[in-house]
Amino acid sequence: MFKRRSNRVFDKTRFRLTLLSILIVETILLACGIAVYEYIVYSRNRGFDREINSVLTSLHDSFEVILKQPSTLEPELAELVPNLCSIGQSCYFQIDRAQFHALGPVWQDNYSIFLLDLSGNPIATAGFLTSSDLKARSLDLKNFIDSRKTLYNESGIRYEYRSVLLHTQTSEDWGYLIVGKSWRETDLELRTIRWSLIVFFVTASVALGAASWWLASFALQPVYRSYQKMQQFTEDAAHELRTPLAVVHTQVETLLRQQNTEKSEFKTSLRTILRQNDRLAKLVTDLLYLARLDRKQDTTKLQRFYLNDILEDLAQELVPLASKANVNLEIKSTAVPKLEVAGREAQLYRAIYNIASNAVRYTPSGGCVTVDLDSTSSEAIVQIRDTGIGISAEDQQHIFDRFYRVDRHQSRKTSGSGLGLSIARAIVETHGGKIDLHSQRDRGSTFAVRLPKHRDRRTSLLG
Image (cartoon, rainbow, N blue to C red; front, side, top):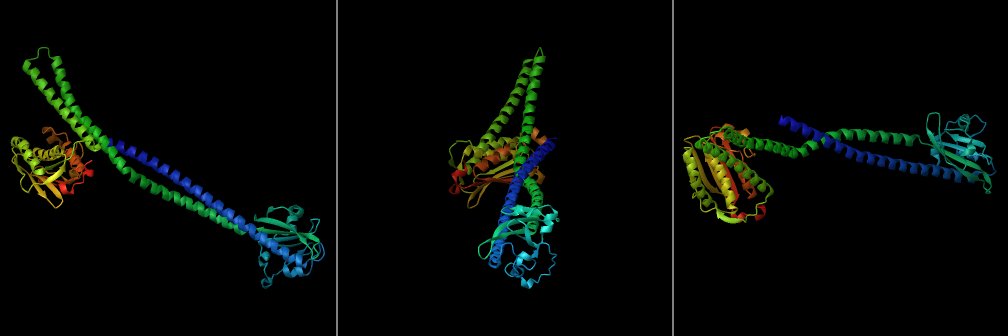
């Protein structure tokens, strides 16, 4: 039930985070795509204007050298504009492209040319869109003079028109030159760019969705694990607290129901309540201690001391426990010369005691627990070996989790709460060390507490 609830919360959070990421990034992509497209349109428009104005200027300068009489076509224009056709004539041209000179682009179907007299009546045309086409569409060329026009032909291709006043060789007004250029190539290019951007946006959206889902899962894994641990911790803590509270409640309820309670029975019940109260107090104390370790709030000053001394004190406290469990306890505090470390002696004593006492509790009668010292050039090592029930590979992954116990039945018999090893690891880690575990089921376990020697100690790690 807990796992399903956690998975549902995780999936909802991952979906929301993925959706939010997609919305943000796709909004940015869309804005960038629109900005890029608008810039391309702007640059193409400017290029289009420069080209049509260039052609208009070239034609204007070339025509004015030839024109002699107002509104009169000179024969030399036919050499300059081979497909120029006077109004009223039926013209058909097979253009020799060898005749194309500097104005070669004009003869392509991208352009249309109109020559008008001073009254605005057409005199001649050249190019793709003729005055007959305009007449059929009820368009008056007079409206093209001194203005900028955009028209569409029957194929839906749009043309942009510019006009200029022509003069004769004697500077008299001759008439008007109108040049139109097709947008076909530019529109095709812009259409291709639009579709490319659309395809890119759709592809990027799909790729982004997959990447966001994966990244959301990856980013939420620590949060998910923390959430699971928090939920598991809450359930385990509630379970541990419920048992002694239930016992206290039962004992008190029994005493209240009995009218004539014997003094011995009364004392027995009070002793039971006291034991459970002690158990609750120890549990709460351990939880508060773990909370302080997590927040690194311990203000105890650091000290230099010998691990050998801790093991000597440990022997005195563990011997009665081992004797009661019929376990052979061997502590070798003098196996190596004095190993000096820096830290909080009481904390490290508690960490080693928790591991060693666990070893005694989980070792069957007649077994053996050994605690000795070892060292390397930079580390002091306390090894706790036992011949107990051992820990499976699966359990080893959780053995230091809070409230986790390998054998809950055995833990109940030994009054374990599952916090001892969690406290031990937290203490060792605050001292810059670590705990290694090697174990096999039914063959025993070896815990190695590794701590930096004093000369390598960095007090900043002790926080």
